[in-house]
Image (cartoon, rainbow, N blue to C red; front, side, top):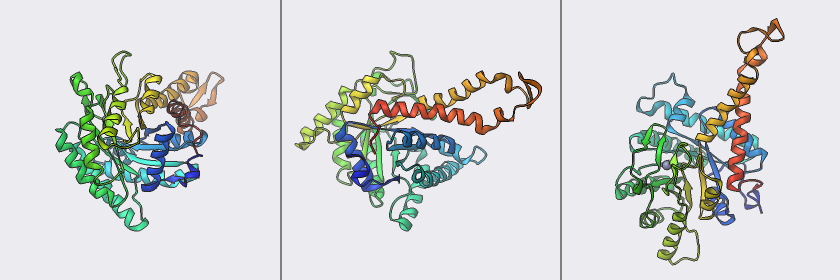
Length: 359
Ligand SMILES: [Zn+2]
C-alpha cells in the first residue's frame, strides 16, 4: 500500500490529503524531510530527488528564503519581499510538482512574533486561493513563538489555527527552545534546561489546539540544535518524544501509542540512529536545511576545482589559448552541478527517514 493507493494525488496537497499522508507516515514509522528552498533551482532539485526515489516530499520556505526568492533588489519593508516571494515560489511549486508527479506538502518555515506580518500576508493569499479553488495556496505554515511564555504561545496559536482551520490549513507550532541559529534568530546562548520540552507542555498544546482542529503538528525541543556544530555538542534525547506520546496517551486514555504528529527541527549533523529513534516515536517531518545548503555549495566547489583551468577567462584553457570556455561558465552548467549534489543529499535524507518507494 502506497501513498497513491490512499487517494493522495500528485502536486501540492492540502487538508484531508495531508492528514492521510501524515497518518500513513506515523503508522508506517517513516518521516518526510522538509527541505528548505530559496530559488527555482533548489525547488527543482528537491522535486527531482523525490521523483527519482518515488517519495512524497515537504518543501518549505523561510522568511529569508522567501525574500531571496523575490530578489534581494526588492525592499523587505513590512515583509513585502517575503510575502511576494513565498507566494511566487508557491505558484512555481504548484505548477511543477504535478510535472514531477510527486505529492508535495508546501510549507512555510519558522515565523517568530516579529515576523507575523509575513504570516498574515501568506494567510491572505491562502484565503484568496481558497475562495477560487476550494483549497489554500499552501498546505501548512509554521508559527514559532517558543520565545514567549507558554500560555501566550498557545493563545496566539489558537487564534491562528481557528482562522486556518476554516480553509483546511495545517499549523506547525514549536514549544521549548531549539538551540543554535537559524535564519537570523540566535539561540546559541540559551541555557541547557530549556532545550528540553516537558510532557505537560506538549499535552497542554494538544488539549487546547485539538479543540479547534486536528491539523496541527508540534516541534518539541529534545536537545536539538539548528545548524551544524562540532560532534558532541548536540545531545539529542529522542526518548523524551516517547515520554510526550506516553503522557498524552495516558491523559487521553486513548489506544493510539503515538497520538501526536511530531516534528524534528535542527536535525542537521545528527547521528543516523538518533534520527531513526525519533521517527519511531511519531516524528513525521524532519527539517533539512544546513546539510542541503552545504551539498549545493559543494557541487559548485567540486566543479570549480576540477575545471579550474577552464574557468579563468572567457577564452583560453589548458587545451589552447584560443579555446572558448562558455560551456564551463554558463550558469546552467555549474548550477546544475550544485543541483546534482543537492539531489543526492535530499535522497540521503529520505533514506535516513525511511521515505523511499512510498508512492
Ligand atoms: Zn525550530
